[in-house]
Image 1 (cartoon, rainbow, N blue to C red):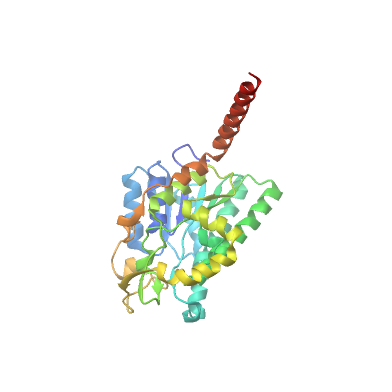
Image 2: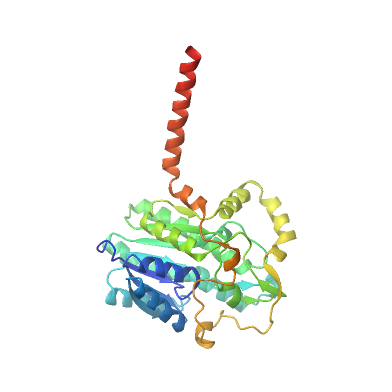
Length: 339
């Protein structure tokens, strides 16, 4: 690995949302950060933020659905920044609509970006990391990697696919005794721009299902996972924990519950403009000339922290403390009983 504080980090989907927040977080450590996305305006703004925080940015316009372009991007990163230490797969495409209203081309596009983009990024990163015997790949996931919800069949399918792919790859690396690590970070609902640029066929404006967290919560967890990749996955937010555990115990009841509530909970009361442009095929920050940044329009209702994340990071210490405390209480009780 490069000198501490100067790692080479690749982030896909780095122009906005979680990827943008990750760029800031890695930049603040002084890392060399390769920013991969389609929209050049957003990439340039992200690069300025990385530079302002003390990092070294490199913008690489790329569509992650193109495996040759992803491979060329990896070559450029290593040529200009050095060997890749951390690769964060984060790029995705959003589409809000009932399954019957999604065309085959649209479904394929979401799958190619959101799932195959991870496959292509992982392949390019892994080939280089395996050769050097070091490196970490972080797959940015979602509670929806385990629990599908209505109106997001393409996205949920892709996130489920990433989950299965990552587990398979992790088993293979363990079999090989490879020093390369892969880990996955399962995220909750986040206040990102996807709800204003994703293709939608809903009558009202899309929103994340509350509780909503700020993208910095996700970025902090992703940076931690990159530094501590020994765990197979991280769960971020109490809502993610509740969703994943509930899906293990009562999946049928969740089907019915989401069938009743899932449409309304993903829409605000404000009507959607049916002619609003979407970024499924083209980046809006280039066509509209707007830098979307990390945050969406839900700042007033979003959380900047999650106690669950702290407990997740310190679960071993807390378990040991609980065992120690339990032993102490037992010894005290035994001593009192003998008096």
